[in-house]
Image (cartoon, rainbow, N blue to C red):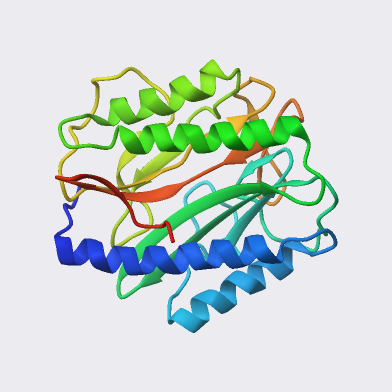
Length: 255
């Protein structure tokens, strides 16, 4: 069931989204060569703590996971697509890093992700990240009343495929509100004009995930969480929480 949010409720979700945005900005600022992924998780924890927010990631355990998620951010490096567990790995020159973060404040959730490079960037990585951001922007632009979920999926997928990138099979965005994951699902590709009609009050997390090698295949690490490209090529992930309003899409996780 899809819960339509009122204007005051969307304002509360924006407050949670702003915590997420500040956490991502702080993590990105702290991400230098030699810094451990676990240190980045501690940076995000402090932002959440200072805001009086909690993490919907910490302790989260969906049906596929063998153990609860142990951190407040997902930190996915190079060939890791999503759900990377922050550990003692220290960032190296040229690493491509994707950070996904959520926050819950006043009973409402926000969720966003950003990809960036550390040290000297490889041009192909910058192109991959730029395309993920372009795909996200295209998906957001399609998130208007009267369109359908398929229109968002088609907009995202068209950008990804036109650039020659793969799209991990079966993964995409989701509704969000009182919980981090709610109906409806938001695929990252598909035919336009299909699926649920978009209405004011719907709030969606739109999140393109791109694989540089052009395949859609992935594998899961032994931790039961981290998804990696099968071909070993790099991946990027961009995400915003977006409210559908009569005036157009409103990004709740942008500073």
